[in-house]
Length: 483
Image 1 (cartoon, one colour):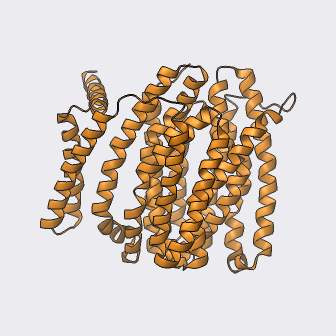
Image 2 (cartoon, helix red, strand yellow):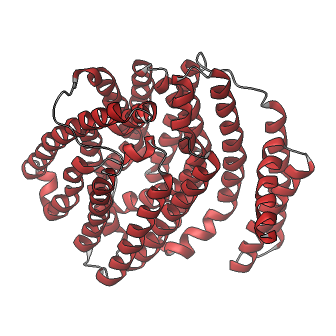
């Protein structure tokens, strides 16, 4: 049975709200307990592990979600497909886990914090049980949000219980590993409701081309998204790693908001394209892009006006540098999801993985070169500049190649409405900043007033997307009151 996109969006919104709140609370707490150099050490160790995790994944999360979405109405094929991908993921994880531990035990640079690297590396091993792609492909967003919420609460409780002094670096790292372990184990148990594991009559070769291409894609993506932290660790200080890490972590939390709509629609987009329903395919892409821009633009404006107050007051005065980093990184909130929607997802469903490899490889090359030079000139600020530049290169390439597969409907009127509404909220924020000393009260007034003015402007301009969604919410609330 086809699931409701509205219901999926709701549960995925809950999922993302939890993913925002708990990392935010965790970061606030950790920043008050652990010094920046310790936060930087953990962030650097997690950064190194990320390269091995993405290799161990073999591109299966992306590929698996697409294939599961296509096969979900054929239970026999679904079980066979899942089993093949699960076994491939298992053996790749074993191989790259061994490779990771050989690296940390032989390279002198890792010996100084060997125990930290051992603990964080457990997440690579746990990858063999990561089957979240099954539930994404089946559009089981209700289960995903409930499971995610439970382990977020558990991890935060353990953090408060265990991490109490500046020396608690290892317990902090271990708690992050426990969260991954819990999610993966519950996934494996719950998966038996949908599939039956098979070990006979499997065909692994049919997946190899797409998996190889997606490994290259995901590795390149990791390089251009993680190389900033990696090179900061080599070329700058661990404090710079911490400042960049906190801004990057905040930005990724906000990115989950702008990605909400696109992520919910990916399985349905793959389904429509696979069924040859190109009108529905193009309508969904157009609608998603409109919502994405409508959400991302005001978020960027608010960050530019509030980051220099929020970061030092939330994480501590030492993290004012993170505010400056975030004011640059925030442009990724619009750039990355747009490229993801109109390029990466379109190329994926049309099986043009080789183009994806080219796009992200170009982005990785640009990222390495720009990070290398900009970090030496501007430290963590340079890493932020390089991140935005490389994301922009990838998005432009994605859209250029992906546009052959889709035909967007009219966008001009919606974008003009968003632009005019953004000008209104920006003028309000400028006036507030000029005439009012900023504190928590005026900050609340700034944000609330800006959001209300933005919404009212869109309503007065009769923006089709905003009016459609606001009317739905209003009608649903009225129905519930009547009941």
